[in-house]
Amino acid sequence: MTGLVLQDISKRFGASTVVEQVQLAVPAGSFVCLLGPSGCGKTTLLRMIAGLETPSQGLILLDGQDITALPTHQRELGMVFQSLALFPHLSVGENIAYPLRIRGRPRAEQARRTEELLNLVHLPGYGDRPVAQLSGGQRQRVAIARALALSPRLFLLDEPLSALDAKLREAMQLELRQLQQRLGITTVVVTHDQREAMTMADLVVVMGEGRVRQAAPPIEIYRHPADAFVADFIGSTNLLELERDAQGRASAFGCALPGVPAPAAGRATLSIRPEDLQLTVPGDGALSGRVSFVRDLGATIETFIEVGGKVLVAVTTPRARAQVQPGDAVGVVLPPENCVVLAS
Ligand code: ATP
Image 1 (cartoon, rainbow, N blue to C red):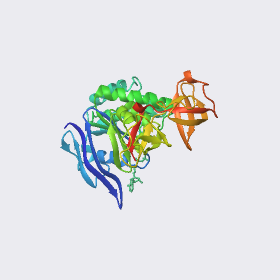
Image 2: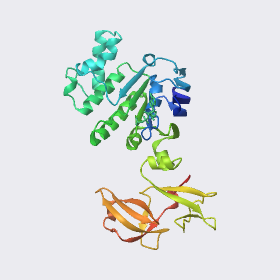
Image 3: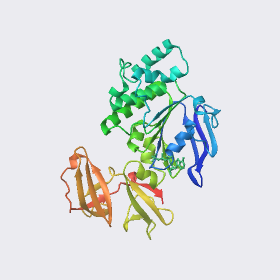
Image 4: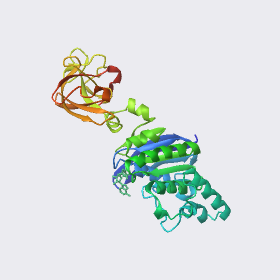
């Protein structure tokens, strides 16, 4: 297959296994985000793809070629790290042309390619500027342009946008995604930000404790999380303990949940997204609760409801504004079609 394939990749440092039996197929031209909490092994996995760490076990294939033992400089990669590592004493153009210069490419080619890349990252005319005079977003674009100078086969980025403020970061996410789509370059990005992953990726790989917990398109992960860890990590969700009652029905907090599949045996976890939880008059929903807090964020309203000692969150649009107040008794509706039953 063309693209990147990881076959049974593990990495041990001494006695601890930080990446464990990762299997992954990244089709050529697609954008993959490795997503997970701090310490789950994302960076180690990316560094093995880059050739900066050697796997303890497994194979890495790029367009069908086994590159597991190939040195980094022979892998034809473009890399951008959080630190960017731009040369502060060089101009924007000199930074971008650097990979071409050290490979001895003719001056005319260096100049032509630098112009091309400056246009590509929306910095035309910036070639002679000192890097020190650029904004955070502009530096980011220079680092991306430099990484693409040699037209790599694979583009690797480790938390590339984490130093930027929230607004600029969102703009750069769209820009990076559009650039990748124009170039059709196979791209792997490490992030711990699920919103960033949802914005950019064709394929999100959720990692936990060194293992791939789920690898799927973003919306599939959001709608059909494989387990409670993934459900909780991707967006926010309400996780309820689900039981099978004496009549064989699914129940939570001792209340039957008609339409929700009962767990086969013992217990399971029910995940329902805040935007799917509905509030109604007391006594009318499947569950009864009391409003403990209302957070009005303008575009949306978050209502926190205490049910049987647990707090559930419902997100509604401003049309529902001022309908409930802290202290109000409410009914809580769990539409069965929005309930995802997870093994626990
Ligand atoms: P973060 O988001 O915090 O960067 P991460 O998911 O990228 O986390 P890694 O940097 O891959 O995680 O680290 C995974 C685990 O491996 C951590 O527990 C880390 O301490 C350990 N680790 C990483 N590199 C080494 C090393 N060279 N020697 C020993 N342990 C290491």
